[in-house]
Image 1: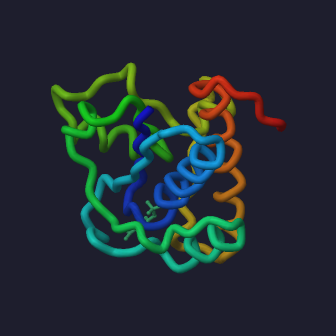
Image 2: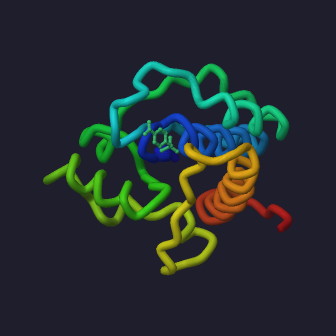
Image 3: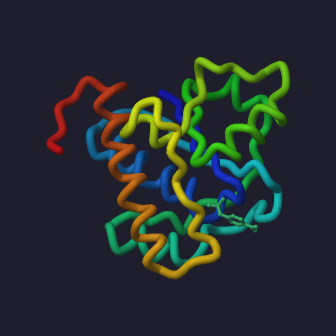
Length: 157
Ligand code: 4NP
């Protein structure tokens, strides 16, 4: 299973989503490949935001080695599933991917927790540390649902 997490900057939300899902998959012995990317190129080559790193570390996950990259249309070939954090990411991915866009591979991440509601993972970029903790909780729930759906394992709620 190859999963790509996408947000705007690849600096706050999607690096956390990548770290959480990779951590859970590894802990279960699943050989899943998880990556992340941003629809914008503002932070290419940068490590995740210090508050994303801090909140991940407080939860036992090291995301400090990640490097920001931009989403490309080839990602639709490379990955089995692409999750976007919000509705504007979805529109941006569609615009960038053009003919490579494949509706069957992409979804809003929170649709795994709240099916068909098209909820956004809020962007914590302009807020305080509290926002990063809230985002972590949302991403953690979604990662559990992805594992339940695509790995044949039982995990407690
Ligand atoms: P992210 O948050 O999409 O969760 O990584 C943002 C990071 C940077 C910017 C916007 C959102 N920015 O405008 O630089």
